[in-house]
Length: 558
Image 1 (cartoon, rainbow, N blue to C red):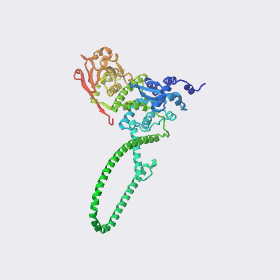
Image 2 (cartoon, rainbow, N blue to C red):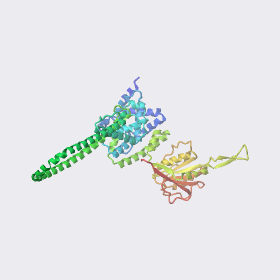
Image 3 (cartoon, rainbow, N blue to C red):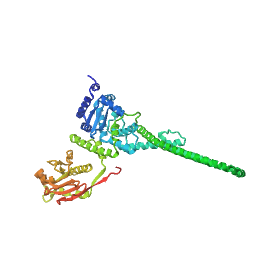
Image 4 (spheres, one colour):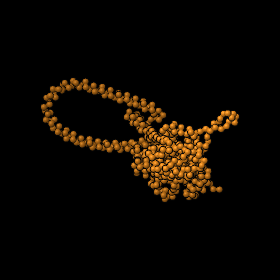
């Protein structure tokens, strides 16, 4: 029987990727299968030898796979002929495990928006566009992503180990650039004082303090010696000044004519000296600019060395190819990069929602990434007053006490339901949509909730039903058009007789920019209240009893 790895090597790259993906769908665990389904939602590209050679010529990097976006902003994961050779490195992992971890690594780079963040960071910090700069920022990104990758895969695949601190990409890059800057300051301090530049890292802080103390003492000593020397010279010269006074007086008239000639010569020399000084100043400015760029590049190189040392990496890890997309992004200005990143966020959210509908869950690390995108916190004004609106829903009814017929028994009235009408028009932003979803989930843990989605028309002909036993995976925005609530006149026809009887409250979730309301009150027996993220509609009907406002709080540090 042929060795399985040998069989893989004999097949085409396209066939290998196809077989590995099909196999993983069958054997993957719940969290792992998310990445396979997400990968399937991306554009998969298989580079042949010719395209791969062009790729290496352009980027100067050999890699088994890389993630990027096409011109339409769609996510692409590319596999190269190097993937076959990459499989040979692994002794403890089988091809399925290798492919799973490699694909997960690339997908996490996409979901984390690392290409956009690297480009924005380079623009904001005005970093030089060199290979060392890309390598440093790639190591930072890999050390974050690889927290969720198999340790054996990282070791055998010569990858970047995960960084132990829970920092964002920007925080981690800032940290090591600052460490490198401080280290250079310490070296310069030691060099000025005549101490060896190399300092043992285990005692660096104490040594720096000693060096600074000795340096200040040395400078003080030199200053005292200089002052003493000046005093001595001053004392010995007083006698000679008196003896030479008469001689200088007799010679002064003879020197007068000579001084006039000397002054003319000195004036000419002064002009030449001034010109030379101006030229020297210009050369100095050019030199300092060159030194500044050179100094910044040295700082970046030192930051990369320090990060790799902290991660325990003795040699350069396998290079990722985020650089390819970053170079394309760097052709744009920083505002364009941010706008494109926001568009891609929505693309990512849509794909995650589609995968969640298929498999029912999303890995915790992906959820945390999505949460980190939020730039605002949303809360409801007068939340306590809003919650009192539900007290009536928890009505109690009286039943007969079988033990003592003279005492009533109070039981919850289980037939009460809440209907939520969710505005899914295009004017509802991601933060508002997320808040609406969260509110629905919170209410459904206590009450049975029915949901209709609407933009210019009702999107579901039957109400979505949620309770504390629901997974809420059906709740996906289906609208994104304009906003008109005229179609709510059909509500009575879309609900059963029992549902209409049991709905005691109707909550309208909107941004308030509504073109038209129903001409009459649907569900006559129910009480209506509204929640708005922006304005209270001026033509809102009076049968909407109360309106509550949602307020946004901008996160600190964003």
